[in-house]
Image 1 (tube, helix red, strand yellow):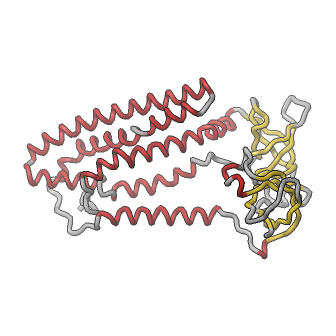
Image 2: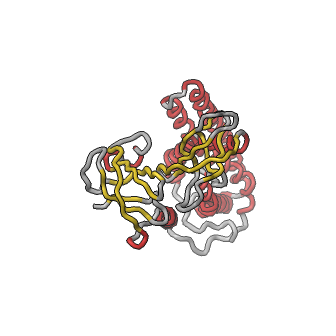
Image 3: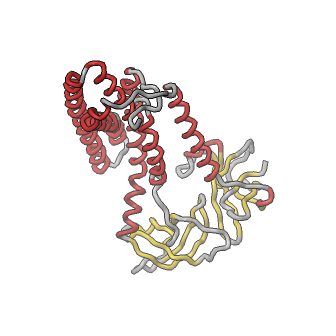
Length: 343
């Protein structure tokens, strides 16, 4: 029963839809994720190979990250910059600061390990590896379909058809991957040459379109070549789940995982863990640093806790005010960077 599908095999139209729409869309998402995090990946590598560590001090907190002051090696003037990492309330303000030799404004609090945001997404790989074998058009379905054709048409005819399919899929997969590699390489070259995102984004999107369809073609080719003869004597499945159940179960599993992730990462602010104070409205509406929060729906406020200046973005929540006003805020006693406006 090793190669029997758990779900009803997908209709042929599903495979066409996957290769024309689903896989290209996932390829674009994959390329975009690594493209947006490439700068962080390079920076993280630079910290391991081209950084120095000196003593510094925390002088403030901006959007949850500490602002540090330190004097680079061989320099006389101090540098004040936002550092990667975190600062816990009550912790010593004298810290070790790692910075890049070529750019001292790129700094991180030593010992506060940080990773590019795309790396945690790799935790989805085990889930993906578990879902692929169950996919209604995945390896189990392919092998079961091969077995059924062999029983119906005979081993010789099926072997000839399988060989033609292997050749076609292999060549198509190679062509798609070569085209994808050329486009993605061109995107990186244009970015390094021009430094503007317009054409690299266009080339990156075009390069992401054939990426996963090409991988899928080569995967199916290898699967058919290596395993087609092993399905001949396998028994028919005693039961299978309806095809539509796979989509429902997959959406439910991913949705539950996303909810748990949001709940785990969203900072809480309860009445028992709250302190009140006054904050200065530094700016309202869109700013270059916080525009991803929703622009006009919020404001940047500045307040002091334990002698440290905190600067955070907050939702307006119906409050009507302009810049340079003083407003009432409430923040977490444990982590003052968690703050909201008092209605």
